[in-house]
Length: 97
Length: 489
Image 1 (cartoon, rainbow over the protein chains, first blue to last red):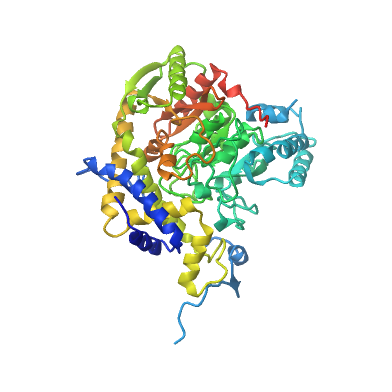
Image 2: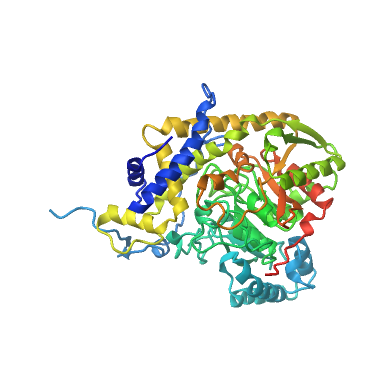
């Protein structure tokens, strides 16, 4: 499967990556090579084969809903690039009109 | 006596019998670090001498009067830098987490800590464990202790090199597609990937959650058995950790393979494979025959699709797992940004290296509208067929023996520009993760260029005992595990 620079731009946008102009060509070439390799999966007959999402028997794990100590706020915030008044701080989300 | 030369079980014995103090161990390994680490660069964060000595003094003091030691007490163990250590920087080899100091220990680490082990350092890795050579680390490559021009393998290359260069007595790594076994083979040490679910992943920074597993890198098989006993078992903090009894693995070690049926899959010995690797692995199989194992040719016909399946599933899971790096709760944030969306995209662009971006892009593509069924759905179905191959094979044999890596360690820089060639170096290890079964890499030879070769032994889910038994019997019948690199550059 060949992928174009335009598709690279689209995927980068979905992945929240601001890739540079210089990288687009390289990514298109490298991703095309890998996707072409992956295309060999098409020759495998998989009609009626259940997909494997995990190798373990998937069972739901329940626990009692009891209050337990958790990470103190200062520790939870300690690695944040920016914090303010006990909260994580992010750039403004809503535009001024 | 050179303490750094000893295996874990040997050093443990010296210490428990009070032939050596914790301070002496700390001093010996600090000295070794100062001497050898500048050549090998196995660590992102090596332990400080003062820290080790302070911990050592506290241990020696605690043991005054009544000498009651725990198995890992004062044992210098290295931890891969994608496993969280409270208060000690955990970078995942990424600029993104350059400043990240975890507020808690991974379950495996808290088990070590409760036994008063020495954290000798956090080891180098390919960024977020994505790679096969440790060249994708944001903090520079690690050298193979056998030859500085060659890679140590990856992604647990720092852990493997640290064990091979006697910088620690043992190490932990993580294995998503071969990241413990492949570097173990490259560096001539023992690498064990347990069954998926055998060891808690709590505190292991997620790469591909249905494949990731923590395991050990050690100087011999006995040490692997001993460490696995400590890290294995159910953990309420990881609901995918299995509630299966943990046996005393050391008791399964025997010097005979009598009664064991060994499968040799023909698909793992193909035309054009490296002749030195083929010869060494065939010799290992002959040795197992001499140890009274019954050898049988088997077939794992889906093997040839394993790399394709893996790079769809692993990248899809990675693209989802790595969405959390958004510059809000931890890690770096791009300096000048206008608005939230730009903050995300610039942070991720600056924080991630090329291979991580490539894999996020691949995974995002495989999961995107219009391609989901063709790639992700298809890969999951073929994964089922790969697992069935193993189920069928294990009806006839107890263990499966294969090469670990197609070639001895390649040169630094050799495959950096060609991602597909790099991915193909995992061809013999990847299907094991897809099937979720345990496997070990054990040294089985040296190439003419004096680079190690490893044989891989694969077992049924939760049958690490058989894997370890076979590995131990083979290892004890050979001298390969005693070979150490000269480090003469």
